[in-house]
Image (cartoon, rainbow, N blue to C red; front, top):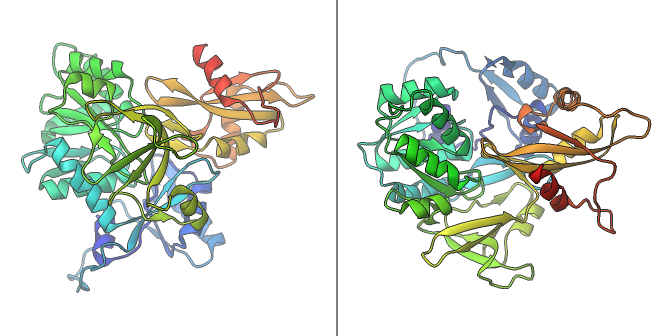
Length: 436
């Protein structure tokens, strides 16, 4: 595996999820100062080789390696240098969309990723007899987290090239997967497969489904429990902190259905109000060895951490009396769709360039399958006809925005609700459209 080989060599690597479009990839290459861009060629109807060469043509000193489908040629064993000795050195650069336009660079070290994997083995009750599965893109922070966890537990691991529900079920059974899941969208997909033949368990070897990355309605837990006979171990984490809290097989059904689990080893939580005061329920700040070392942008790093080393997550929550975390909201204006962060500002910037869009606000609305869906609320430009949803999707595609960020719902209004300072009141939009 290329990523593991680079880690052994001590190289600095920037895994990029395949759903990113050319616009995002080019921004990440520039901010990371990448010297080599490795892509799979043509995969799932996307010519990554062409995209990579177009980026290299404008990025300066950047080499491109297109991986052949049958793997790299083999030769004589290479002589390896000594393994890396400084575990705290930044060697991993991930990306995340926050409240800024383009993805931000998130810096991790071997130490922070190892801490995350180590903190997960215990709560998941994993042993060397387990067989895990990564059904999501390995380039997601969860890939390194799950790989590290599996190595520490000494268990085998199956990596899916892509997640096709029926095929995933077949492979789970073929390899005897015992620990799987990944997030709300995956739980829903497995449920749909189970409902095709309710009398026969579709995942008979699986002990539980586990994951996070997006809100999980409690109804999903109860549906999985009743129809599949499995627990769902929902966790709370993010690219900056791969694991903050998680459920465990030893937890009660009530705890698993209604919370994000307990803080993992090494994590310290602080709940604060807008003035920075400690409160029972407030914005969550987190500190510990699992936390990333900072963003590639020093200004963003300074804004995200306090003087005591606590990182501001932007999420709102509280600890229950039993020590389990309950998330109650988000302070940051982001959309979490199928476990991936989407910056509304980035989508707004693209939509604003459409000639028929006079003003636009992009919001996330609750969605049982996706966690949240992307909704564009627009004012039509004077003299123009209202665009259709398909018009806007095609415009986003033409502008190089990845399909997952394109709007899935469109609402046309005479006037967006605004404050006296002309800031759009997105909360009002969410309240009104969330009921419709």
